[in-house]
Amino acid sequence: MTKVLIIIPAFNEAGNVGAAVDQVRRSSVPCDILVVDDGSTDTTAQEARAHKAVVLSLPFNLGIGGAVQTGFKYAREHGYDIAVQIDGDGQHDASYLARLIEPIERQQADLVIGSRFLAPSDGFKSTFTRRVGIRFFVSLINMLTATKITDPTSGFRAYSRKMIASFAMYYPHDFPEPEAVVVAKRANAVILEIPVVMRARQGGVSSIGSIKSLYYMLKVTVAILLHMIRRRERHENDH
Amino acid sequence: MTIRLLAILISSVIFLYVLDLVRRRKLTFKYALAWLFVSAAAVISAIFHKLLFAVAAWLGFELPSNFIFFSLMCVFVVLSLLLTVFLCQQNERNNCMAQKISILESSIADLKKKISP
Picture 1 (cartoon, rainbow over the protein chains, first blue to last red):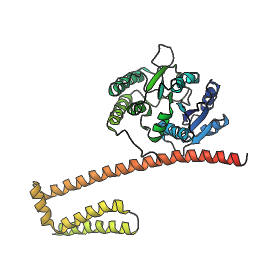
Picture 2 (picture 1 turned 180 degrees about the vertical axis):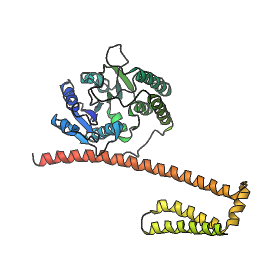
Picture 3 (picture 1 turned 30 degrees about the vertical axis):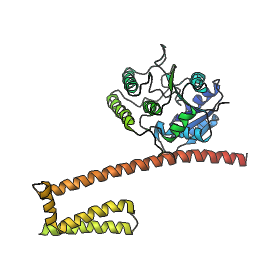
Picture 4 (picture 1 turned 60 degrees about the vertical axis):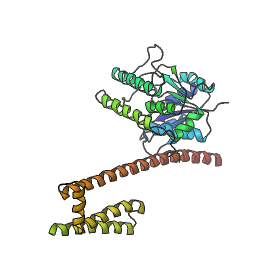
């Protein structure tokens, strides 16, 4: 029996996180649900607990990378075979969970990404500027790591035991989604994508404005390039 | 002549201040070493200024003052780089501890539930 852990990073998601937990539970996948409360100042933790999720409360805000990594550490400690990262703001549809973890159960992949751009569909595909940015990262990452991914910024992902162990030790904190693809690829992980439909963000604003997006792209590019010169083994974070 | 006295005075004060910080355990050996070295070099070059001038001339600086500014700049660049490394290390450790605390907290809560259901 494969043990599956659903990791929901949540920062001030009161009003959303309960619904996200319920949605995961309604899916056909038997799993444990972990909400990582990333130093929220609202009632995110209480709400998640009321919906019978395991809650880890970080004493201060670490950002999404630090929150998800906390989930990997928990998964490693409790011997989970598969971890799934899903947003707490209702962007991701939990009905794809079964399809997301299937390639890992069959040992065909170490990292499965739910991609918005793989199949023609009419779901939410982000704003125009963000799509341009995503296309740029796609070419950059695919060129550097010889992958063929289409949605490196998607935070709807499933991880194998090998990935859990590796990311529990080192997980990028600055731009975790695109960086993690590069880190995983450099650790010789098999990366697979499955088509998913995403909803537009329910409440809350995207953290990236259109004026700042050029600077953002530059930063992510540098971050990704720096990963290419980084040593593959890194254990500093493994305390 | 007064400027030399001033230089000797200030560099000595800095050197003694570093020693005092170590004495009062405000500075650990690891970080005191670099400061002791730099301030000792300052004291020595203030006292034996001829030596400083000779080194400056040998390196090709037209003015000894330029050599002093250049060396100071180098010291500060290296120092701030080292401090940034230290800061990153502390930050990472801090993050790790936050993560560990959250995991430990949840296992404590689990244990409590097991003891008194």
